[in-house]
Length: 268
Length: 251
Image (cartoon, rainbow over all chains, first blue to last red; front, side, top):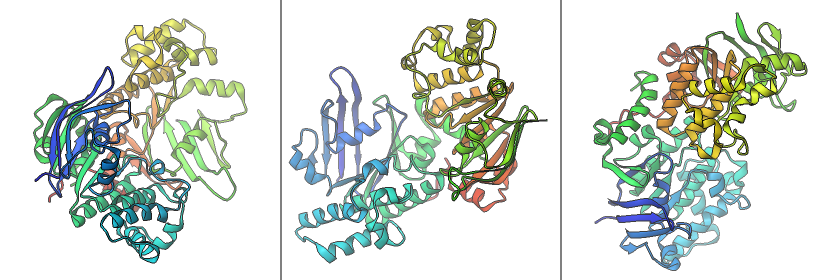
């Protein structure tokens, strides 16, 4: 059974269609990439799937997440889904984290909420221990110190690790990562991608990975959906789509990516 | 002869923190050099020094054999005519209230360059592949890639000998990025190019020489092909190993 089934999803303003008739599904533990350039609708799709679209935008169609309909769902119902079935990691960890709250507390909040929903509430020392475990799981050194730090005291890579720890605290079945390494340096990016890959496998989470960066996607997911101006251009196994793109647009994207990749020479 | 010579330059905004440390660099006529580094490496600071926006604490920078003197007005006017810059964000680097003509003609006005500005602007527009009609419109009417072409037209309108580009393609979509890199490659036939970027793939595609900056020091420089094929410094090796490649991982 699919964990996520998106069926004819459209997102529109009063006069423009931004995402049109998008359909795909995701099985538990599966890794899917949404790729496209700016304006392709990839981030809006993620927001629509979690019921987080701005009010001015209208979603139609169906998004079944863990058996529940997201489109038209009440805030109460969606709040339960978010933070149990699904958690998100965004591009810019500095805006995703509360600047006035210590990092440990920001991780403790979703962890306590999840435990309460599971009927096994935790607090005090047990909660602190959970936070430390999560910080260790995202490979942050000296977790006691990091838990006491504010976001501005951490580097970009450390902040993104904290944001990932917050997502893990929800024990989600599906992790949505929207350009999670785009704001990071290339050496940090490699570390975060390695971390995400390991966590997704270890916890058997499904991953919806949104990115404009083809080489990053190639190394992260199994299947891809290529979007352009809100329309699905092509879908398939990443190996097939990248080796033999069927659509001209996919071909032009790959050709562009390859021109820079080839310039780097024959590293394998 | 060097167009720009950076000789053992060190710089810091405060005494206790050096941003650049003993940097030496030669830019000769016809060079295309990629300056690569991650955040905090000092690449933008080095560019600011090259533009005369900051002065080195130690060491010297010379242009055409004469020391770069930010205080010397006539010299700097001459220098600005020879060295122009393109920035990363095409949305914030163009004045939204001016028409494209006036934006592109700005260096001609401020550098008091005589001649027919309309002709110069038209030829700059043609060089960056924009329609002559572009001149009558406003920046908001253009896409990111077109705006970056406008910024490049402004940079080349005074026919500089050196073009400095600070992450000039980083904010652009992939397919647009390829086209702007092609444009810069074409323009670099007629002028030297110093291309500052964190993206080693773009530098590999565009620049014949590469300079690797880490924590304010140049750790490696040389012919791009040689450095990529056999990186000597451990940081360069780590940087190259971190770049995600299109070739699929075996799973």
